[in-house]
Image (cartoon, rainbow, N blue to C red):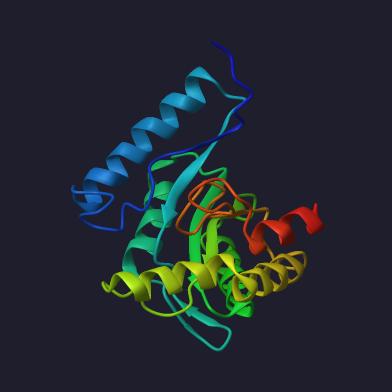
Length: 200
């Protein structure tokens, strides 16, 4: 089979344990190096990256203080000569401006670690209207807010602001039905879907 998949991300949120990764940091770094180098050797035209970082760090104003895993990953790629064509990260917030400030912080860290050519991919973003409750009715209201007028306004603001942000790709999470998707559980478009349609 031949598929026109250009970007290959190695794993997703290895810093999110145990939900997404049950190994150690060293296990992931070894996996990343082996996979990235193998892909580069066999298919040099592909763009390889990762790690789909769930936590980019503490943001104070415009200053981003990264967690140890972030800088360790970059240092490992540099020391081990592992390809890093793109650095992927996630952002969930109730402030669309935060996505832009984080993007600037991520870009600065990439440049500081000599990855000036690496693309920055915000490959998961969405509105996070507070903490998700375990109460069923509260959860229903929370998800309705994400897909309703408030979530739609957030998506519109984020899409506008991201145009001038130092990111090369930004992927909304998610287009699937239900939960945080652009469609309700039965496939009906949400208000947020209308924003993406209007934005083309």
